[in-house]
Length: 588
Image (cartoon, rainbow, N blue to C red; front, side, top):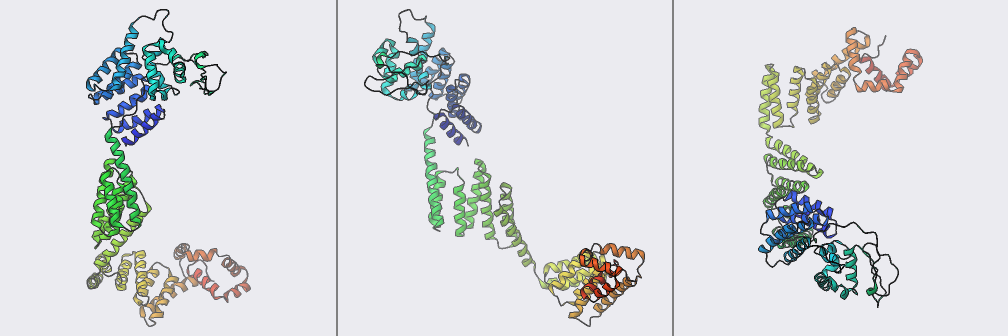
């Protein structure tokens, strides 16, 4: 947000990190391009970097956005001063004074600009004039403010008064040479390094340029002689950096935000203690103080959720989402509000349709942020909706009617129509094994063997004693040429109904097919087809890959005595029989 970027820029400027300050103010301007204060602050940062052209551009933009603001003309005058356009600087300061006649910064800037303008137009000083006159010109304050060793002195009224007196009359310098601050300032202004020490004290005052290393003693500050160094390149004059502009309304805003955070903390504490009414009061107060933090709304929504006030919870969540999008809040916060709303909708759901808005809300939350908790809530809601739909749809009487309609179509050999009615019967009563059995018969007639097998197995799952289910399953397996499995199914059915003729006939047909393979009566095509099908059977694959069975098969071919021993083992013989039935092994 622009306020955050501005605050970072102010902090960087105060720390002397002017490049960082420019970067942060630029970010803030991108977010709030009509805020005149941001251009003013960046102008000051550019001036501190001696980038006076950029400072001038920002100052002009400031005046354009806020032509009745004196500070803008102060920035404009400072930029012109840095560019040595003293005439324009004078005009800028005068324009600012017309708007704010009592602005001391503008008055001081005007005086410096006029002095600089006069100085630039008059001839050089005659011989015999003060050798330090040039040092105390209009650029004096700028240079003192830009040097770290003298910047703090400008906050001291007595020092400022002395320097003003020296500026008016450079010959008065001798009156203040005993003050170490004046000597320090003189060194900065002349690009020289002085070693200063008071007569009555032994402390050293390091120069700004030497890093504080001590030098040889001098008898007194008054007798101090300049020690010439290699002169630094003359710096361009730069305007005195001014404090960042913090309007009164912004200060109040920060105070409100701080108070709002305290209210939130108090609300959190009350929530943990289950003191929901108190928590509501604190969160509500926080919302009044700061409407730019949607966590206050989501927290209050959580309290309403705990209290069972679902409508209030939903209202707060909707407000949080709307406000969050306006403020471009973190997508996780918006997702949290949507998830909380979805939870409230689930709590309110009384029918399967009531779950639809909750499911939609959870899906929206996941588009904002894919949170595992939200995903679980979505899955639970979808499952609850499906279960409730089945409960709402359950009607055994209608199920019987639909099954009878299916039976009629089955007799007429209209199998697709029969399937449709059997399916409706299953929806109306999912616990009826007869509907599954009948639909399995339809699928068998239609050649949909996998679907028929699935229905037959579901029928037996619902009623393991239902003989019709075994005949359906056995028939499907027989048509799929899985004779061994079909035989097992028929035999299992006979345990429950030993006299069932369909089951007995099924056993007879399976035995005939199995013996046919044992006798070698299969045609080459039938044998090839049966072998290919058998090789896809996991059970046959396990038998063939079993090391013991592999040795048994070798013994049957090469060692008749060992084969006779193997035939005494029922498990081995059962597996051999399966291989014979599958056409993998032939007995001759």
